[in-house]
Amino acid sequence: MKKNEGSKEESTRSKVFAELPQEKWDDLTRAVEHRVVAPRTIICRQEDPADSFYIIRSGKVRVYRRDNDGRETELSVLGTGESFGEMALLTGQARSANVEAIEETRLTVLSKEQFERILKDFPQIPLAFMKQMSQRLLKAEKIIDKEVRRQYLAPRVSWFDFLLLIGVSVILALMFNRSNPNGIPLFSNFPDKRAISEISAARAMEQVNKGGTVIVDAGPEIFYETKHIQGAVSIPLALFDIVYSMAFGGEEKGKNVIVYGGTVSKLYDWDLAEKLLQRGHKDVKVLEGGVAAWEKAGYPVKGGGEKK
Image 1 (cartoon, rainbow, N blue to C red):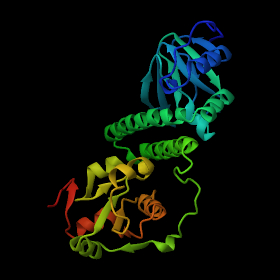
Image 2: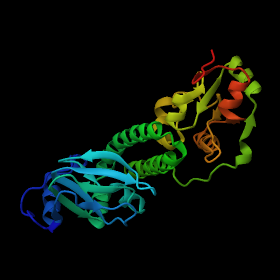
Image 3: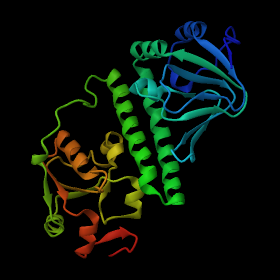
Image 4: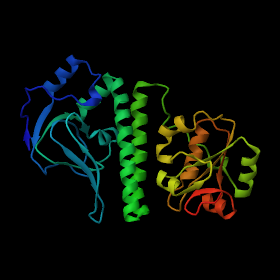
């Protein structure tokens, strides 16, 4: 890996820095490091500490994860003008994926200090990261869903899915809050779980028939597609901060909300119910037994063995 090569030439500007004033960008490119990496060079390794942000001036890299059994899941291929490395810098955690050069690749490298200074000085930049991370999030979720279907090993793959999506949701909130003082509350006091009660399938159906009740599926999208309660709104727990305003924001806070979607290993339903209480919903309950109890009672579901 060659360093500082081509440092005098103009660097390709990352899309997320499109709003950065030209003068500031010129100053930055004179101060940053430039690298040229050969094909098949590992630029970032999974679990390594994070200290840099990378912009691709030319060439291509692939982003992938490797599990404990050595299986690889390719998440994306990035090219000229794209960037990587921001997630670990923003969370302070280790790298979540490997990045390998596919061909000779020229990089502009920002240190952690340079990266953080730009975010602080230009609040519009975090919003650009929010858009980029949202797009990558949706793409990664589809790739992981496909891998789950292919291997039929949902529990093994879904843990990465949970951690990745929850982590990115926090990142988006942090970036949004940098430029919006009334942003997403990250560290508010969580409501006592005693404020949330369970409701039986029969009682839930009574409330639905009376009207004024919304049923929410809190599980990952792949579970929702496989089977869900007819008429339920899909709000995956890991995507709550992104999906809520689009799929649920228009509902009146006074409506009854019934949440389901928990599994043995992950209480999606209880966690999402807490989030709804934090958003001001007054009557939130968790469906006892989830979709299985609903279906067993003979109530309508959609997906595998659909009942109408």
